Image (cartoon, rainbow, N blue to C red):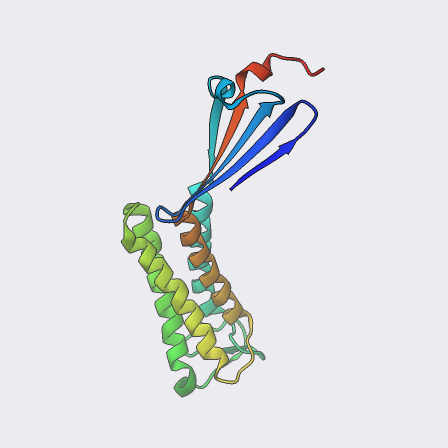
Length: 196
């Protein structure tokens, strides 16, 4: 996709290139003086690339895994009702074990798989296994909250934290795998000129 916009002395050329098979998006911004041809511009173009930081995606994944663990410590239903086998902070009651045992096991499984994915992500970078573990943990978090909601009980802090944790982990993996590059092209001849 190409878009041109013009001002008094130059034309701004914007081009989007999407490579779906490589999961890559490149955005090219180019400034051309009015009246210049493409051939005369190519020799004086200077490119600089800006890549989205992988550190931001790593923070999202770790924060999501941390929220899954924290969700176990918070009540999942109103009136301070906790999942079975949870550590109660202050006064509260447990939800019936028979109905909510699967939910309690699944959220713990999501937390364990999520942290295993984080550890693998740190030590086995570039492999598929950490991403599969983190995506599985996020999916288990979603499934757990949906299963809990179908039991006819209103949601509270613990369920919301598990849902946000799952979203952050999946979003972190998607942002990590979808490489976005922004290429900014500058005209070296224009840098020495003064505006008229």
